[in-house]
Length: 503
Image 1 (cartoon, rainbow, N blue to C red):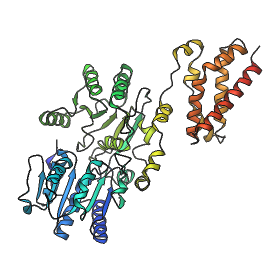
Image 2 (tube, rainbow, N blue to C red):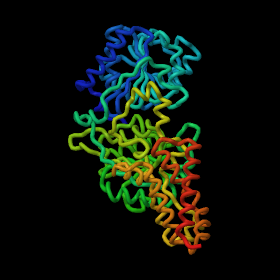
Image 3 (cartoon, rainbow, N blue to C red):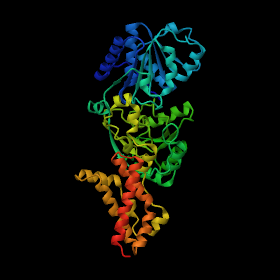
Image 4 (spheres, rainbow, N blue to C red):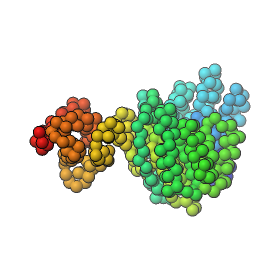
Protein backbone atom coordinates (compact mmCIF):
# COMPACT_ATOMS: atom_id res chain seq x y z
CA UNK A 1 0.00 0.00 0.00
CA UNK A 2 1.33 3.42 -0.98
CA UNK A 3 0.98 6.24 1.51
CA UNK A 4 -0.50 9.18 -0.41
CA UNK A 5 1.18 11.63 1.97
CA UNK A 6 4.55 10.58 0.62
CA UNK A 7 3.76 12.31 -2.68
CA UNK A 8 3.23 15.84 -1.49
CA UNK A 9 5.76 18.20 -2.97
CA UNK A 10 8.71 18.59 -0.65
CA UNK A 11 12.15 20.11 -0.60
CA UNK A 12 15.03 17.83 -1.50
CA UNK A 13 17.63 17.13 1.13
CA UNK A 14 20.99 18.81 0.46
CA UNK A 15 22.65 15.56 -0.66
CA UNK A 16 19.72 14.85 -3.01
CA UNK A 17 19.99 18.31 -4.59
CA UNK A 18 23.70 17.70 -5.08
CA UNK A 19 22.98 14.42 -6.88
CA UNK A 20 20.33 15.97 -9.17
CA UNK A 21 22.70 18.76 -10.20
CA UNK A 22 25.59 16.32 -10.70
CA UNK A 23 23.61 14.02 -13.00
CA UNK A 24 21.99 16.82 -15.02
CA UNK A 25 25.43 18.42 -15.38
CA UNK A 26 26.92 15.16 -16.60
CA UNK A 27 24.24 14.76 -19.29
CA UNK A 28 24.70 18.38 -20.41
CA UNK A 29 28.42 17.82 -20.73
CA UNK A 30 28.33 14.46 -22.51
CA UNK A 31 25.39 15.13 -24.83
CA UNK A 32 23.05 12.58 -26.39
CA UNK A 33 23.70 8.85 -26.51
CA UNK A 34 25.44 8.85 -23.12
CA UNK A 35 24.31 6.28 -20.56
CA UNK A 36 24.85 6.85 -16.85
CA UNK A 37 24.38 4.48 -13.91
CA UNK A 38 23.65 5.91 -10.48
CA UNK A 39 23.98 4.01 -7.18
CA UNK A 40 22.28 5.00 -3.94
CA UNK A 41 21.34 2.78 -0.97
CA UNK A 42 17.74 1.73 -0.36
CA UNK A 43 16.10 4.46 1.69
CA UNK A 44 18.17 7.25 0.12
CA UNK A 45 15.20 8.47 -1.93
CA UNK A 46 15.96 7.22 -5.44
CA UNK A 47 12.39 7.81 -6.67
CA UNK A 48 12.35 11.39 -5.39
CA UNK A 49 15.77 12.01 -6.93
CA UNK A 50 15.08 10.67 -10.42
CA UNK A 51 11.65 12.36 -10.46
CA UNK A 52 13.39 15.69 -9.86
CA UNK A 53 15.95 14.80 -12.52
CA UNK A 54 13.05 14.21 -14.91
CA UNK A 55 11.58 17.62 -14.07
CA UNK A 56 14.93 19.40 -14.55
CA UNK A 57 15.52 17.58 -17.84
CA UNK A 58 12.06 18.44 -19.19
CA UNK A 59 12.42 22.10 -18.24
CA UNK A 60 15.86 22.39 -19.83
CA UNK A 61 15.37 20.38 -23.03
CA UNK A 62 11.57 20.46 -23.61
CA UNK A 63 11.81 16.75 -24.49
CA UNK A 64 9.97 13.84 -22.93
CA UNK A 65 11.13 11.41 -20.26
CA UNK A 66 10.35 7.68 -20.11
CA UNK A 67 10.65 5.85 -16.78
CA UNK A 68 10.85 2.06 -16.77
CA UNK A 69 10.04 -0.22 -13.84
CA UNK A 70 9.48 -3.96 -13.47
CA UNK A 71 6.36 -3.85 -11.25
CA UNK A 72 3.06 -2.04 -11.56
CA UNK A 73 3.27 -0.79 -7.96
CA UNK A 74 6.49 1.04 -8.83
CA UNK A 75 4.84 2.54 -11.91
CA UNK A 76 2.01 3.96 -9.84
CA UNK A 77 4.39 5.14 -7.10
CA UNK A 78 6.56 6.94 -9.66
CA UNK A 79 3.58 8.47 -11.44
CA UNK A 80 2.30 9.94 -8.17
CA UNK A 81 5.73 11.39 -7.41
CA UNK A 82 5.92 13.01 -10.85
CA UNK A 83 2.41 14.42 -10.41
CA UNK A 84 3.43 15.98 -7.11
CA UNK A 85 6.17 17.82 -9.00
CA UNK A 86 3.70 19.17 -11.56
CA UNK A 87 4.75 16.88 -14.40
CA UNK A 88 1.99 15.76 -16.75
CA UNK A 89 2.58 12.03 -16.94
CA UNK A 90 0.86 8.85 -18.09
CA UNK A 91 1.17 5.23 -16.94
CA UNK A 92 1.45 2.76 -19.82
CA UNK A 93 -0.19 -0.40 -18.55
CA UNK A 94 -1.73 -3.40 -20.30
CA UNK A 95 -4.87 -1.40 -21.11
CA UNK A 96 -2.95 1.25 -23.08
CA UNK A 97 -2.77 0.03 -26.68
CA UNK A 98 -2.16 3.37 -28.40
CA UNK A 99 -0.78 6.79 -27.46
CA UNK A 100 -2.81 9.13 -29.64
CA UNK A 101 -2.77 11.66 -26.80
CA UNK A 102 0.96 11.55 -26.08
CA UNK A 103 1.43 15.21 -27.00
CA UNK A 104 -0.45 16.07 -23.80
CA UNK A 105 2.17 14.42 -21.58
CA UNK A 106 5.73 15.28 -20.59
CA UNK A 107 6.66 11.87 -19.24
CA UNK A 108 5.57 8.24 -19.26
CA UNK A 109 6.05 5.41 -16.81
CA UNK A 110 5.84 1.81 -18.02
CA UNK A 111 6.51 -1.76 -17.07
CA UNK A 112 9.26 -3.12 -19.25
CA UNK A 113 7.36 -6.13 -20.64
CA UNK A 114 4.28 -4.09 -21.52
CA UNK A 115 6.31 -1.42 -23.30
CA UNK A 116 8.44 -4.00 -25.10
CA UNK A 117 5.31 -5.57 -26.56
CA UNK A 118 4.10 -2.19 -27.79
CA UNK A 119 7.48 -1.31 -29.31
CA UNK A 120 7.71 -4.63 -31.11
CA UNK A 121 4.44 -3.78 -32.85
CA UNK A 122 5.40 -0.15 -33.42
CA UNK A 123 8.97 1.07 -32.89
CA UNK A 124 7.66 4.66 -32.79
CA UNK A 125 5.02 3.94 -30.16
CA UNK A 126 6.54 6.74 -28.01
CA UNK A 127 8.13 9.72 -29.74
CA UNK A 128 10.51 12.54 -28.78
CA UNK A 129 11.94 10.77 -25.71
CA UNK A 130 15.25 12.36 -24.76
CA UNK A 131 15.84 10.60 -21.43
CA UNK A 132 15.07 7.05 -20.35
CA UNK A 133 15.24 6.40 -16.60
CA UNK A 134 15.54 2.77 -15.50
CA UNK A 135 14.54 1.98 -11.91
CA UNK A 136 16.17 -1.11 -10.33
CA UNK A 137 18.65 -1.05 -13.19
CA UNK A 138 20.47 -4.18 -12.05
CA UNK A 139 17.55 -6.14 -13.49
CA UNK A 140 18.60 -7.18 -17.00
CA UNK A 141 15.08 -7.33 -18.41
CA UNK A 142 15.44 -3.63 -19.28
CA UNK A 143 18.20 -3.95 -21.85
CA UNK A 144 15.77 -5.20 -24.52
CA UNK A 145 14.24 -1.70 -24.56
CA UNK A 146 17.49 0.16 -25.14
CA UNK A 147 17.62 -0.59 -28.87
CA UNK A 148 14.59 1.66 -29.43
CA UNK A 149 16.23 4.68 -27.76
CA UNK A 150 19.74 4.74 -29.16
CA UNK A 151 19.72 8.54 -29.55
CA UNK A 152 18.47 9.18 -26.02
CA UNK A 153 20.30 9.44 -22.71
CA UNK A 154 19.74 6.51 -20.37
CA UNK A 155 19.95 6.84 -16.59
CA UNK A 156 19.98 3.60 -14.62
CA UNK A 157 19.26 3.78 -10.90
CA UNK A 158 20.03 1.01 -8.41
CA UNK A 159 21.19 0.36 -4.86
CA UNK A 160 23.54 -2.38 -6.06
CA UNK A 161 25.22 -1.90 -9.46
CA UNK A 162 25.69 -5.62 -10.11
CA UNK A 163 23.85 -7.23 -13.00
CA UNK A 164 21.24 -9.86 -12.18
CA UNK A 165 22.97 -11.90 -14.89
CA UNK A 166 26.74 -12.03 -14.43
CA UNK A 167 27.15 -12.90 -18.11
CA UNK A 168 25.65 -9.50 -19.02
CA UNK A 169 27.57 -6.90 -16.97
CA UNK A 170 26.09 -3.43 -16.54
CA UNK A 171 29.23 -1.79 -17.95
CA UNK A 172 28.18 -3.11 -21.36
CA UNK A 173 25.21 -0.71 -21.34
CA UNK A 174 26.36 2.18 -19.16
CA UNK A 175 29.31 4.46 -19.85
CA UNK A 176 29.91 5.57 -16.27
CA UNK A 177 28.87 4.91 -12.67
CA UNK A 178 28.18 7.67 -10.17
CA UNK A 179 28.27 6.42 -6.59
CA UNK A 180 26.04 8.28 -4.14
CA UNK A 181 26.34 8.54 -0.38
CA UNK A 182 27.23 5.31 1.42
CA UNK A 183 24.91 3.64 3.92
CA UNK A 184 27.23 4.68 6.73
CA UNK A 185 27.22 8.31 5.59
CA UNK A 186 23.41 8.40 5.34
CA UNK A 187 23.18 6.98 8.86
CA UNK A 188 25.66 9.48 10.27
CA UNK A 189 23.88 12.38 8.57
CA UNK A 190 20.54 11.27 10.02
CA UNK A 191 18.82 10.10 6.82
CA UNK A 192 18.74 6.37 7.58
CA UNK A 193 18.26 4.31 10.73
CA UNK A 194 21.21 2.20 11.84
CA UNK A 195 20.97 -1.59 11.93
CA UNK A 196 21.70 -3.60 15.06
CA UNK A 197 22.47 -7.06 13.71
CA UNK A 198 22.23 -10.42 15.44
CA UNK A 199 23.48 -13.54 13.69
CA UNK A 200 22.48 -17.11 14.44
CA UNK A 201 24.62 -19.94 13.10
CA UNK A 202 22.55 -22.27 10.96
CA UNK A 203 23.37 -25.52 9.19
CA UNK A 204 22.96 -24.90 5.47
CA UNK A 205 23.80 -28.44 4.49
CA UNK A 206 21.31 -29.41 1.79
CA UNK A 207 21.10 -26.06 0.02
CA UNK A 208 21.73 -26.22 -3.71
CA UNK A 209 22.67 -23.45 -6.12
CA UNK A 210 20.43 -22.93 -9.15
CA UNK A 211 21.11 -21.67 -12.64
CA UNK A 212 20.61 -18.05 -11.53
CA UNK A 213 23.45 -18.39 -9.03
CA UNK A 214 21.28 -18.25 -5.91
CA UNK A 215 20.11 -21.06 -3.67
CA UNK A 216 17.14 -22.90 -5.15
CA UNK A 217 13.69 -22.43 -3.65
CA UNK A 218 13.13 -26.19 -3.41
CA UNK A 219 16.32 -26.82 -1.42
CA UNK A 220 15.64 -23.75 0.77
CA UNK A 221 12.16 -25.05 1.53
CA UNK A 222 13.61 -28.34 2.75
CA UNK A 223 16.20 -26.65 4.97
CA UNK A 224 13.95 -23.96 6.45
CA UNK A 225 10.78 -26.00 6.89
CA UNK A 226 12.29 -28.49 9.33
CA UNK A 227 11.45 -28.39 13.02
CA UNK A 228 14.89 -27.26 14.22
CA UNK A 229 15.03 -24.25 11.90
CA UNK A 230 11.53 -23.18 12.91
CA UNK A 231 12.46 -23.46 16.57
CA UNK A 232 15.58 -21.38 15.97
CA UNK A 233 13.49 -18.70 14.25
CA UNK A 234 11.02 -18.56 17.13
CA UNK A 235 13.86 -18.47 19.66
CA UNK A 236 15.56 -15.58 17.83
CA UNK A 237 12.33 -13.59 17.68
CA UNK A 238 11.48 -14.18 21.33
CA UNK A 239 15.03 -13.40 22.43
CA UNK A 240 15.34 -10.08 20.58
CA UNK A 241 12.16 -8.74 19.00
CA UNK A 242 8.98 -9.63 20.89
CA UNK A 243 6.52 -6.76 20.53
CA UNK A 244 8.41 -5.11 17.66
CA UNK A 245 6.86 -4.68 14.23
CA UNK A 246 8.61 -7.43 12.30
CA UNK A 247 9.05 -8.32 8.63
CA UNK A 248 10.18 -11.89 7.91
CA UNK A 249 11.68 -12.80 4.52
CA UNK A 250 11.52 -16.43 3.36
CA UNK A 251 12.63 -18.17 0.18
CA UNK A 252 9.48 -20.22 -0.40
CA UNK A 253 5.73 -20.07 0.14
CA UNK A 254 5.57 -23.31 2.14
CA UNK A 255 8.22 -22.00 4.52
CA UNK A 256 6.34 -18.73 5.00
CA UNK A 257 3.07 -20.55 5.66
CA UNK A 258 4.90 -22.72 8.19
CA UNK A 259 6.21 -19.58 9.90
CA UNK A 260 2.65 -18.23 10.02
CA UNK A 261 1.36 -21.44 11.64
CA UNK A 262 4.24 -21.49 14.14
CA UNK A 263 3.75 -17.92 15.35
CA UNK A 264 -0.04 -18.26 15.32
CA UNK A 265 0.20 -21.26 17.68
CA UNK A 266 2.15 -19.04 20.08
CA UNK A 267 -0.51 -16.32 19.87
CA UNK A 268 1.59 -13.71 18.10
CA UNK A 269 -0.14 -11.25 15.70
CA UNK A 270 1.02 -12.48 12.27
CA UNK A 271 -0.11 -12.54 8.64
CA UNK A 272 1.33 -14.28 5.58
CA UNK A 273 1.71 -12.66 2.13
CA UNK A 274 2.97 -13.95 -1.19
CA UNK A 275 2.61 -13.20 -4.92
CA UNK A 276 -0.51 -15.35 -5.31
CA UNK A 277 -2.61 -12.91 -3.26
CA UNK A 278 -5.07 -10.57 -5.02
CA UNK A 279 -4.43 -6.82 -5.01
CA UNK A 280 -7.33 -6.36 -2.59
CA UNK A 281 -6.03 -8.96 -0.13
CA UNK A 282 -2.53 -7.54 -0.39
CA UNK A 283 -3.74 -4.02 0.40
CA UNK A 284 -5.79 -5.29 3.34
CA UNK A 285 -2.83 -7.17 4.81
CA UNK A 286 -0.45 -4.24 4.39
CA UNK A 287 -3.00 -1.89 5.97
CA UNK A 288 -3.29 -4.31 8.93
CA UNK A 289 0.51 -4.45 9.18
CA UNK A 290 0.82 -0.66 9.13
CA UNK A 291 -1.81 -0.07 11.78
CA UNK A 292 -1.18 -2.98 14.17
CA UNK A 293 1.34 -2.53 16.96
CA UNK A 294 3.86 -5.37 17.15
CA UNK A 295 2.53 -6.91 13.92
CA UNK A 296 4.51 -9.67 12.20
CA UNK A 297 4.37 -10.12 8.42
CA UNK A 298 5.94 -13.23 6.89
CA UNK A 299 6.44 -12.97 3.14
CA UNK A 300 8.11 -14.35 0.05
CA UNK A 301 9.96 -11.95 -2.27
CA UNK A 302 7.05 -9.62 -2.92
CA UNK A 303 8.13 -6.92 -0.43
CA UNK A 304 11.78 -6.57 -1.45
CA UNK A 305 11.02 -3.63 -3.79
CA UNK A 306 8.25 -1.06 -4.05
CA UNK A 307 7.28 -1.46 -0.40
CA UNK A 308 7.64 1.43 2.01
CA UNK A 309 6.69 1.00 5.67
CA UNK A 310 8.87 3.17 7.94
CA UNK A 311 7.38 1.67 11.13
CA UNK A 312 9.16 -1.67 10.57
CA UNK A 313 11.40 -2.29 13.59
CA UNK A 314 12.84 -5.74 12.87
CA UNK A 315 13.93 -7.52 9.70
CA UNK A 316 14.33 -11.29 9.94
CA UNK A 317 16.26 -13.03 7.15
CA UNK A 318 14.76 -16.50 7.45
CA UNK A 319 16.59 -17.56 4.34
CA UNK A 320 20.04 -17.72 2.80
CA UNK A 321 20.91 -15.88 -0.38
CA UNK A 322 23.97 -15.51 -2.59
CA UNK A 323 22.61 -12.27 -4.06
CA UNK A 324 24.17 -9.14 -2.61
CA UNK A 325 21.37 -7.14 -4.24
CA UNK A 326 18.65 -9.15 -2.50
CA UNK A 327 20.55 -8.96 0.80
CA UNK A 328 20.55 -5.15 0.64
CA UNK A 329 16.95 -4.97 -0.56
CA UNK A 330 15.67 -7.05 2.35
CA UNK A 331 17.54 -5.20 5.08
CA UNK A 332 16.80 -1.84 3.47
CA UNK A 333 13.08 -2.34 4.19
CA UNK A 334 13.82 -1.53 7.83
CA UNK A 335 16.11 1.45 7.31
CA UNK A 336 13.48 4.18 6.91
CA UNK A 337 13.97 6.90 9.50
CA UNK A 338 11.29 8.15 11.90
CA UNK A 339 11.45 10.74 14.68
CA UNK A 340 11.53 7.99 17.30
CA UNK A 341 13.38 5.39 15.21
CA UNK A 342 17.14 5.73 14.99
CA UNK A 343 17.88 1.99 15.07
CA UNK A 344 16.23 -1.12 13.69
CA UNK A 345 17.04 -4.78 14.27
CA UNK A 346 18.27 -7.42 11.83
CA UNK A 347 18.10 -11.11 12.74
CA UNK A 348 20.13 -13.21 10.29
CA UNK A 349 19.28 -16.91 10.10
CA UNK A 350 20.99 -17.58 6.78
CA UNK A 351 24.69 -16.91 7.46
CA UNK A 352 24.20 -13.93 5.15
CA UNK A 353 26.27 -11.53 7.26
CA UNK A 354 29.12 -14.02 7.15
CA UNK A 355 28.78 -14.11 3.37
CA UNK A 356 28.41 -10.40 2.64
CA UNK A 357 29.53 -8.51 5.73
CA UNK A 358 27.38 -6.13 7.73
CA UNK A 359 24.84 -4.04 5.82
CA UNK A 360 26.58 -0.80 6.87
CA UNK A 361 30.06 -1.86 5.69
CA UNK A 362 31.78 -0.04 2.83
CA UNK A 363 31.56 -1.64 -0.60
CA UNK A 364 33.68 -0.54 -3.53
CA UNK A 365 30.89 -0.18 -6.07
CA UNK A 366 33.22 1.20 -8.73
CA UNK A 367 35.17 -2.06 -8.54
CA UNK A 368 31.91 -4.03 -8.78
CA UNK A 369 30.90 -2.03 -11.87
CA UNK A 370 34.24 -2.06 -13.67
CA UNK A 371 35.35 -5.59 -12.76
CA UNK A 372 32.21 -7.57 -11.84
CA UNK A 373 33.82 -10.98 -12.40
CA UNK A 374 36.70 -10.18 -10.07
CA UNK A 375 34.32 -8.66 -7.54
CA UNK A 376 32.12 -11.75 -7.51
CA UNK A 377 34.98 -14.24 -7.62
CA UNK A 378 36.45 -12.70 -4.49
CA UNK A 379 33.59 -14.37 -2.66
CA UNK A 380 33.23 -18.08 -2.02
CA UNK A 381 32.13 -20.22 -4.95
CA UNK A 382 28.97 -22.23 -4.49
CA UNK A 383 30.65 -25.47 -3.43
CA UNK A 384 33.13 -23.90 -1.04
CA UNK A 385 30.48 -21.50 0.21
CA UNK A 386 28.43 -24.34 1.64
CA UNK A 387 31.44 -26.37 2.76
CA UNK A 388 33.00 -23.38 4.47
CA UNK A 389 30.01 -22.16 6.39
CA UNK A 390 27.83 -25.21 7.07
CA UNK A 391 27.91 -26.60 10.59
CA UNK A 392 29.81 -29.88 10.57
CA UNK A 393 28.14 -33.06 11.68
CA UNK A 394 30.09 -36.29 12.03
CA UNK A 395 28.78 -39.41 10.30
CA UNK A 396 26.70 -41.43 12.74
CA UNK A 397 28.89 -44.56 12.56
CA UNK A 398 32.07 -42.58 13.25
CA UNK A 399 30.42 -40.64 16.06
CA UNK A 400 29.50 -43.92 17.76
CA UNK A 401 33.17 -44.95 17.87
CA UNK A 402 34.34 -41.85 19.74
CA UNK A 403 34.27 -41.10 23.47
CA UNK A 404 34.12 -37.34 22.87
CA UNK A 405 32.95 -36.65 19.29
CA UNK A 406 32.42 -32.98 20.16
CA UNK A 407 36.21 -32.52 20.04
CA UNK A 408 35.97 -32.90 16.27
CA UNK A 409 32.58 -31.27 15.71
CA UNK A 410 33.44 -28.13 17.64
CA UNK A 411 36.85 -27.61 16.01
CA UNK A 412 36.76 -24.67 13.57
CA UNK A 413 39.80 -24.29 11.34
CA UNK A 414 38.80 -20.74 10.46
CA UNK A 415 38.49 -19.73 14.13
CA UNK A 416 41.83 -21.34 14.96
CA UNK A 417 43.47 -19.67 11.96
CA UNK A 418 42.08 -16.26 12.92
CA UNK A 419 43.32 -16.68 16.50
CA UNK A 420 46.81 -17.62 15.28
CA UNK A 421 46.97 -14.46 13.19
CA UNK A 422 45.60 -12.33 16.05
CA UNK A 423 48.23 -13.81 18.41
CA UNK A 424 51.07 -13.01 16.01
CA UNK A 425 51.66 -16.64 15.01
CA UNK A 426 51.96 -18.03 11.51
CA UNK A 427 48.83 -19.14 9.70
CA UNK A 428 50.44 -22.54 9.18
CA UNK A 429 50.37 -23.06 12.96
CA UNK A 430 46.63 -23.64 12.61
CA UNK A 431 47.38 -26.84 10.68
CA UNK A 432 49.65 -28.06 13.50
CA UNK A 433 46.95 -27.30 16.09
CA UNK A 434 44.47 -29.24 13.97
CA UNK A 435 46.87 -32.16 13.81
CA UNK A 436 47.25 -32.12 17.61
CA UNK A 437 43.47 -32.23 17.91
CA UNK A 438 43.18 -35.20 15.57
CA UNK A 439 45.96 -37.05 17.35
CA UNK A 440 44.29 -36.46 20.73
CA UNK A 441 41.05 -38.00 19.40
CA UNK A 442 42.93 -40.95 17.88
CA UNK A 443 44.91 -41.59 21.05
CA UNK A 444 41.95 -41.60 23.44
CA UNK A 445 39.96 -43.96 21.22
CA UNK A 446 42.71 -46.45 20.28
CA UNK A 447 44.27 -49.27 22.30
CA UNK A 448 47.33 -49.46 20.06
CA UNK A 449 49.01 -48.19 16.91
CA UNK A 450 46.95 -50.46 14.66
CA UNK A 451 43.66 -49.15 16.04
CA UNK A 452 45.00 -45.64 15.61
CA UNK A 453 45.89 -46.12 11.93
CA UNK A 454 42.44 -47.62 11.24
CA UNK A 455 40.75 -44.69 12.95
CA UNK A 456 42.90 -42.31 10.92
CA UNK A 457 41.31 -43.71 7.77
CA UNK A 458 37.86 -42.96 9.19
CA UNK A 459 38.94 -39.36 9.76
CA UNK A 460 39.87 -38.62 6.14
CA UNK A 461 36.71 -36.67 5.34
CA UNK A 462 37.15 -34.53 8.43
CA UNK A 463 40.81 -33.92 7.59
CA UNK A 464 39.97 -32.87 4.04
CA UNK A 465 37.20 -30.57 5.27
CA UNK A 466 39.59 -28.77 7.63
CA UNK A 467 42.32 -28.42 5.06
CA UNK A 468 39.85 -26.98 2.53
CA UNK A 469 38.93 -24.39 5.12
CA UNK A 470 42.61 -23.62 5.67
CA UNK A 471 43.27 -23.10 1.94
CA UNK A 472 40.33 -20.70 1.81
CA UNK A 473 41.78 -18.76 4.75
CA UNK A 474 45.08 -18.29 2.94
CA UNK A 475 43.38 -17.84 -0.48
CA UNK A 476 45.49 -20.62 -1.96
CA UNK A 477 42.91 -23.18 -2.97
CA UNK A 478 44.49 -25.00 -5.94
CA UNK A 479 43.88 -28.73 -6.12
CA UNK A 480 47.60 -29.52 -6.27
CA UNK A 481 48.30 -27.53 -3.09
CA UNK A 482 45.39 -29.13 -1.27
CA UNK A 483 46.55 -32.62 -2.29
CA UNK A 484 50.10 -31.89 -1.14
CA UNK A 485 48.82 -30.50 2.14
CA UNK A 486 46.65 -33.56 2.73
CA UNK A 487 49.48 -36.00 1.96
CA UNK A 488 51.84 -34.15 4.30
CA UNK A 489 49.22 -33.97 7.05
CA UNK A 490 48.48 -37.72 6.87
CA UNK A 491 52.16 -38.66 6.72
CA UNK A 492 53.04 -36.62 9.79
CA UNK A 493 49.99 -37.81 11.71
CA UNK A 494 50.75 -41.44 10.80
CA UNK A 495 54.34 -41.05 11.97
CA UNK A 496 53.15 -39.62 15.28
CA UNK A 497 50.67 -42.49 15.78
CA UNK A 498 53.40 -45.06 15.09
CA UNK A 499 55.84 -43.30 17.41
CA UNK A 500 53.57 -42.54 20.40
CA UNK A 501 51.00 -45.34 20.51
CA UNK A 502 51.95 -48.86 21.69
CA UNK A 503 52.53 -51.60 19.10
